[in-house]
Image (cartoon, rainbow, N blue to C red; front, side, top):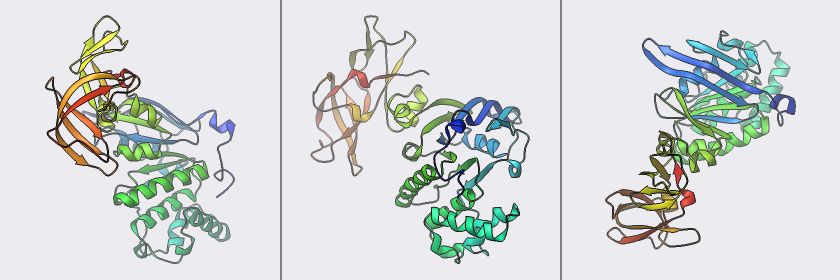
Amino acid sequence: MSAKTAGSVPASAASSPAVEFRGVTMRFGAFTAVEAVDLAVRAGDYLVLLGPSGGGKTTLLNILGGFLTPSAGRVLIEGRDVTALPPARRPTTTVFQDYALFPHMTIEANVGFGLRMRRIGGAERAARVARALELVGLAETARRRPHELSGGQRQRIALARALVVEPSVLLLDEPLGALDLKLRRQMQEELKAIQRRVGTTFVHVTHDQEEAMAIADEIVVMNGGRIEDRGAPERVYLRPRTRFTATFMGDNNVLEGRPAGDGSFETPIGRFPLEVAEAVAALSLRPEHLHLETGPGRLPAGTALLEESSFFGTHHQGVARHESGNSLRLRLPQQDAPAPGERLSLFLDPADLVPLAE
């Protein structure tokens, strides 16, 4: 790869956004797929657009790639307005879920196809293809054809083909969706490592929360064509800002309640010291933050009857019926976990209770 993509992003480049959406709206007839989105992506970041089907994330990616022209708003890449530019004239490339490799071409020819379309000379093209294949760890496959490679290898070839043209922004549209779980996790690690090495800004679409948390510098949660939440994976998971984010980002217990007026919050499982705005009507509590034993900072949260328990390898996932009648999700120990039918004493640290906006 060239010096541009061989290392970290220069400070001058990092000071301005790689991508900006300014008031972007996309309508298909009477249906609004994306509504008034403002979003800036830092240069050199790995940003993940996360959300359910129909949330607007793929539409936003297609607008960035030039495959759709927004009904309103502007798209800028490195400060340049590209709203009206077709895909071929944008400094972007896209990696799709289906790889889109040419079956009759060798791997070497597939990776070099974009360079040939840009009329890059044979010697330089060969050198850049070799470097791209080395980058993804598949230098030995140059003379093979796509059908001779595994799914994970074909995905890496698609990545090499996208990176070899040295885009300013690489777009990834559900790139790991067709892979099995083990290979998907391996590719998550490889994608993150490659992005760190080349320093290119990645914008990645997925509906998989675990995938988003594993690879992202920043997650943008989308729902109904709008941005629900955005931030570092740890913040979005541990301190979700909205009810939707709390329930979409993994398992959660949403505790309906109200401020008690004395610096505490009343919930069905107890009253806990928590200063919140008067309008707050619910709290987020992750299953792993409900404990079976007391400890520093923990307060009693009543008792519950364990109804179900499933083994997930690292832990048991349980569902219990609280004495108030509410159903609660619990994360139970890998070993010596209580069995269904046992009554449990519950404890929580009020610091783990997160006020939610609607």
